[in-house]
Image (cartoon, rainbow, N blue to C red; front, side, top):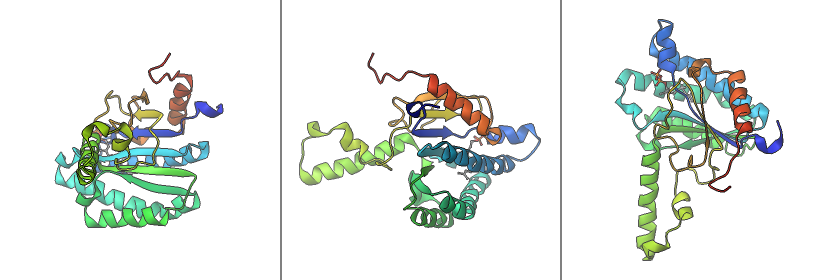
Length: 235
Ligand code: FPP
């Protein structure tokens, strides 16, 4: 695939774990476990293809509304996944990064994530960002609050606020905007994911449920992206 037709940042809404499990007469938790296997598979595929940024929507601010047992399954899965994958992240020079408000996460999940974040901080080949307790509107709101505080402190006029002033107060200001945003399992919406950053992302939807999403599906998305003409509002 020619150089600039490879997206630098791919973001994924990993949907369909529950439906995948249901179709096989299994519990939703087994869908999430299979989803974690897909995370490993797709991360390796991105690494091998030389994509420097991969961002995954692992738990939204709205996912707290699910039954408590499902929430704790997901939190425990994240905790265990990150701990278990740490050696492989190191081996593959992958840096773990985060989006979202992690203060509300169970302490064990937070600790496991924090440990992996600091252990992999120097890795450079791929930045794997997990969005956990993340909502695009919540991120913008928290950034706006920081901005207001800074502005008030320096007594600056609101008219002096630029887009960069807000963007630089988001959760991960070093992360470039996603070039390609993939959503699995058939729904065609953003569901509060990266609402600021995805303003000019190319969107790709597939009916494949996340636990079934493999390397070939990833390549189909990359091939579709390579066909797109990006204009960013120009001609
Ligand atoms: C959506 O499927 C998926 C989630 C809410 C959680 C995503 C979590 C994982 C893929 C597993 C763990 C993640 C990592 C990073 C190890 P759904 O439950 O909404 O499916 P449904 O729409 O079919 O019910």
